[in-house]
Image 1 (tube, protein in one colour):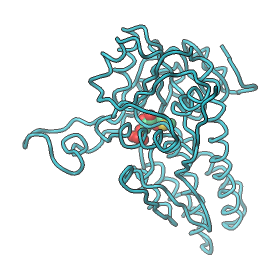
Image 2: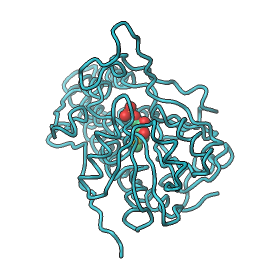
Image 3: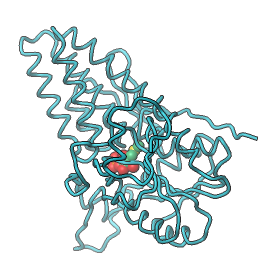
Image 4: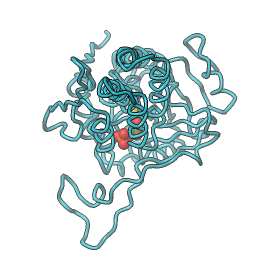
Length: 355
Ligand code: MRU
């Protein structure tokens, strides 16, 4: 009997010329929406993680450009104003390539527009299309990823890759939703994901909200869980996939990949084609965001580390391609990724298994 799942969370909405973001700093304690009408404030929201997750960052920035066009109306130098805002948005966070992918597309809409008014219409429509396409792509990705999962065991995921990290449905969490719905997984485990706790705060909230049981573990429990035989796949998202398949994702992902290989557990990366940076030959060149020490030294605003200790807080790490069993995108699956195999995704013709 197929399990019925719900897919109810949408973190980004645009209405009446305003952008609304579900504030992810406040979840799960509080469901609070923030409203934006200017691009610099949107850049700040991305930097401060009101919204986070690679696809969600890209879509948010796209709506940020629509807001920039709105505010530039009536000014002779409207193009220069919008371009300045696009640069501000580009500087919000460095690792997720979806931000730059989305801004390049929006800048092209601006360049092709004859007036600020035309640019408002073009960018608003393009951002909405990006949002809708993301959700549709995630559903496809979910179905493709679920097919790889042999029924009978559990899955482990890291960070938050769900509706909150995308336009909706999710990437890795979309695969988990689809596999759960098809009764292909027995249980779902989510790393708490120190230091920002995307796993225990966001993934757990989202799965409970949508009726999928979840067990949260601290990262230190992953090795023995993977040794136990209960897990068939580790399934994670990505912030940037280099052309050879090396994958930047939330700090701790690389360690999980090493553990998975050591215990014969398969390792899946689920991400849209927009997350693949074909101009980046391998993971060595991916810029890794360093975040504030306080995120590591404190919990819930309360310092827990000994006074005088310093914090080390890289937000992402890079998993080498040879530790990845499959990269699942909306356009197809690439097993044992290499540069040659991934290149097929540059011009996705059909959906399904590519290699
Ligand atoms: O710092 P964050 O929360 O933006 O990091 C998010 C991640 O690392 C996600 O795993 C990744 O963006 C994929 S989201 C579909």
